[in-house]
Image 1 (cartoon, each protein chain N blue to C red):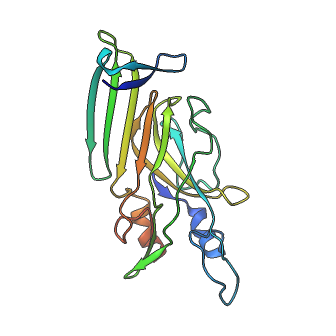
Image 2: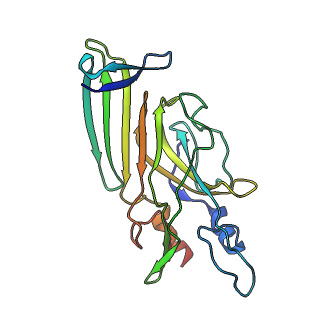
Image 3: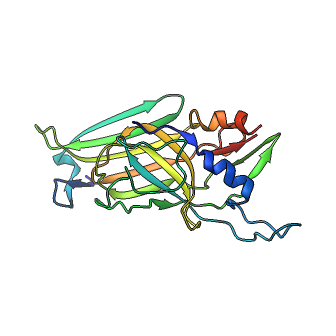
Length: 156
Length: 71
């Protein structure tokens, strides 16, 4: 099994249920959601099997809690609210995810985005990249351009 | 010269960069632009430092396909 980039199917259902708040908003006609959720990015080994059927964050296949890696990953900076362009709504974290003085417990090729504010840590999406190992170093994952063609999360 | 963090299996220590052999590389494709740097001691194959900076251009599959899925 391998990690496969995807937006989780469960996330699409949760959007319809109003389970995620990527940005704060004022009270509307049906509910008041004035605070936004927090989102984390966690790293997974190449031997992992994260993918579209994931529903919640868990530590199966995640980097071990060693070498200055904390399971659960890092909190993403979310200073830019979701917006739209044309018929596409989109959102991207407003800063890179970074791990300093990291020695990874193995090669990894996957990052999982999940809602850390939700009780069950609802998973949003799985992202993959070329296999990496870090030794006493820094890993930085820079985010894509926040526009309707490249943003991390795009809905049209 | 700069001090480089290294790990020889018993935690992080620092050595002068001049004592190490540096290797750099770039991965550039449709999905990412990644720059990495490695350090070894001369004559050794053991990597004692490796850092990487992964710049995502546009995440592949899944998310692109999502647009059609939700339309």
